[in-house]
Length: 193
Ligand SMILES: [Mn+2]
Image 1 (cartoon, rainbow, N blue to C red):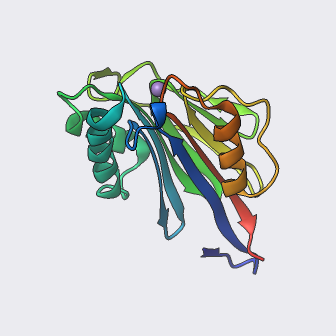
Image 2: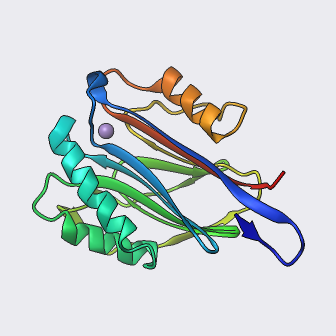
Image 3: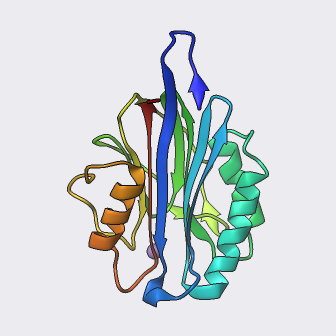
């Protein structure tokens, strides 16, 4: 939760839903939201391949992110490129959330939208090859959805009604592929009730 001097209390409504390929217990899609004093850090990862091997690389990425939440997303992605070096690599999208704006960087095939605005990821594979990441800043106001999803989920026409948990569950239930890990992350600011 974040308090603001205006007297309006805001908090983050967020959810991550991942379904592993072939209903395996583990897979290479992984999302996380790490709450911070003035917002949060959000990430969605799609490690190349499936199953336990991909899961293991995703855990390395997760640990790197959680150990470096103070870094700006572009620097964090460079850190991830180092720690994933020599692995199969991953597509990774990162967003540092503030109230009113977010800073985004992504490499590879994780799709990211803020409201109707699509934020372009750079080509490449984290841990294999990538250019110097460049931050994109986007306005991010109350009740606007940040959505990240991996390529194991079809593009939704819209975000289902309800809170983040309900909407993320619906998206995976309706749009997850049977042939890949599928992951979605939804996050928005909303008034504290
Ligand atoms: Mn995938």
